[in-house]
Length: 302
Figure 1 (tube, rainbow, N blue to C red):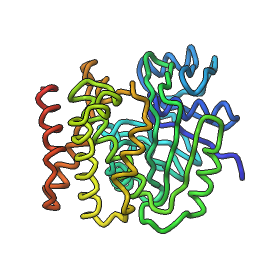
Figure 2: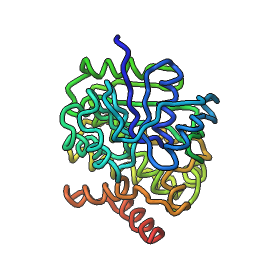
Figure 3: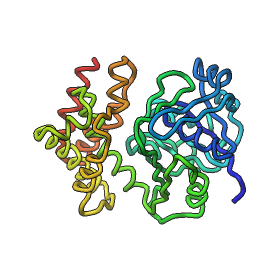
């Protein structure tokens, strides 16, 4: 494989971590950032700490969006509320653009701006960005699942992306139907992001309490119902598999949304439980557990 040039669009915790792993492997990586973060990357480089090991770089190639140039692969790592602007900023810059946003709408939104270069992905990692240029990885895992949006199998370009992402510190998995991967994560995050934010309790306390565990499972089950109503071919064991996965999450883990709420930052509530409430209404699927969390967090963040 000819070495792929990688552009990381959005150098927060997720983008910085994956970009750093690719850079460590010898990949040609350019980071797009802005403001104080851009200045810190240019002056001090980047370091990674935490459960996935510690390493760093005194210097990285960090640029503004207007200086992005072209790349073979763009990792689109901005928050959902910045997605449209970010996509416009890199229009024409990437031969393949991989969305790594939370939720299930990002690939559709990105494709409306960028066209068929977009492929859909989801990622599992618990990481924080305590200061510009410093990623702290809480989880002992960092996976990326990705594929074509139409469920047509693993294409040649998905194979190339898989090869590019096959580096130390990253567990890539090409999948035949990206919709399934997106909904697998969406269901977990509606439970995890929703309840850790609403209750300000870690996953271990939530899943260890019978009543809260039942509420978490109800959220997952409602997500399953919405996905099936949309024609997503989920497995028959979807809910039990998602609960088993949740039990393997670090008991001390909090979602990034819960941390953002405490810090007074903008949160992705509409990406998670809010999206399920909206889709449930459109599809006439009852989603009371998600609605309860959605309204509760809206009240807390008002």
